[in-house]
Image (tube, rainbow, N blue to C red; front, side):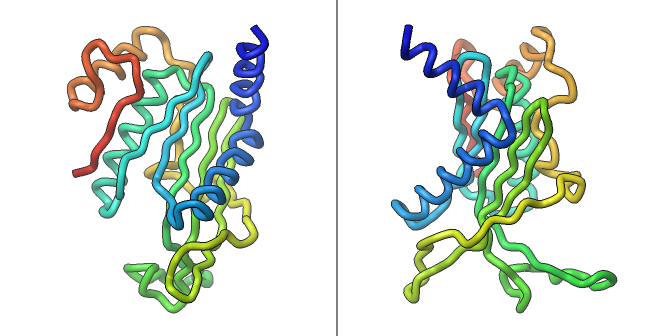
Length: 197
């Protein structure tokens, strides 16, 4: 009973934007210190459990869009109360009126970051941290974090959770869609597996 109470409290904490944000930062920093890299990860908080999906490299715009669709289906199927997406990315900062280059990684103004998007029924939070590398190119730490305005992000992963809690019928439709895509076994209750390749 004590363990069940602890799990319930943990899930309640992770169902808040601040709770997910702190958890995501801990995951990112721990991953870099232990492994020297960040795996794109979707963490879904449900009523009585949590799920994690590792999609592998999202190295093209199509792969990103495909996984964004899958991520939303996962959240509907699971009846998610909260969702967190963490990934490695490059970004550029441009002045008003200027246009960003085609590839931020090749830009003089490009910055390597770890990107975190958290979402619950109470709202969304976006945060990024600059990546710090050693002389041999290995990720070693994250710099100071910066909260981003949610209004800036409208497409792709701009929204993970549905506007209203999904009905049982809608959750079943999402499950069947994942099955039809080959991402979930017919009788499986485990998180879907996704491969962009």
